[in-house]
Image 1 (cartoon, rainbow, N blue to C red):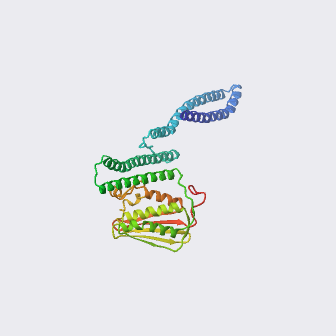
Image 2: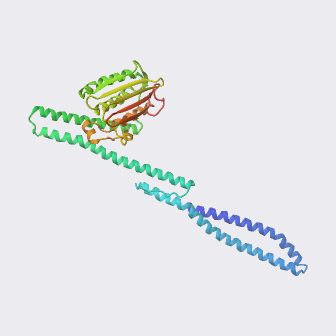
Length: 367
C-alpha cells in the first residue's frame, strides 16, 4: 500500500511538472504561430515555412510530454522501491522479533530518519534479548534454589519416617536440618514475593519521623548473639539522636539484611562496624566488615537478583542471592542511594544515604 501510494504521488508530481512546462512552452509559441499564420495568408513563403516549423515544434512538445510521462512513471516506481525497501526490511525484522528471534537485526547504512528507526529497532531487539536471557537464567536459578531445600526436606523426612535413625541426638539434628531448610525456603518465597511487588510497583513504604540512631542500636543488639557465636565484634557509632522520615519496618529490614551478610561472611575474630552520620539534609549509614570481600569482577553484579559470588559457599552459609536486590529497591523507594566497595580478603563497606526529609510525597510506592 505504501509503495503504491508513493508511485502515484511521485508520478502525479512529475507529470504535473511536465504538463506545466509543456503548456507554458505552447503558450509562448502560440503568438508566434498566429503571427506567422497571418503573415502566411499574405503569400509569404518564408512565413509559411516558419508556421510549419512552429506546428512541428508543438507536435514535438506533445511527443516529449508523452515520453516524459512514461519516464516519470518509471522514475516513480524506482524511487518508491528505493524508499520502501528499508521499511520492508524493518517489517521483516519486527516479525522475527514477534516470533522470539531476538538475534534479528536491521541493517543500518543511512543516517536519516529511517536509519534512526533502524537503530531504535536494534536497541529494542537487544533489550528483548537481554530480558529473555535474564528470564531464562532467573527461572533456572529459582528451580535450583527450590530443588536444594526440597531435596533436604524430602531426604531427611523420609529417613525419619522410615525409622532409620534410632539415636535421639541424631534425630534431633535431622529435625533441625529440616527446620532450617524450611526456613530457607520460606525466606526465598517471601523475597520472591517482595521482588514481584517491586517489579509491579506494588512495594509500598509508609514513612514517618523516627530516630534512625535508635533503630540501628536495636538492630545491632538483635544481631549481637549471632556475632558472638562467630566470635565477631559488632560495634555501633553514631549520634544520640538522628531524626529521619522513613518506613521503620523497611529500613530495619535493610539494616538487618546488611548486618546478617556482614556477620555471615566475616571470619572468626573479625569485626563489623556500623556508623551513622547526620549530615543535615541526609543521614549517612555505613556498615563495614573485615570479611572475605568481593572481587572487582563480581562487585558490579552484587545487586542483581540471585547473584552470588560463590554459589556453593553462599548456599552453605544460607544466602539466596535476593537480599541485596531488595535492599537496593527499598533504599531507592526512600529516595536514597546505596553502593558498595570491597577488596578481597580485606573486607566490604556498604554505604547508604537517606534524605532526612524522607521520600518525595506522591512518588510511586510512597504512602
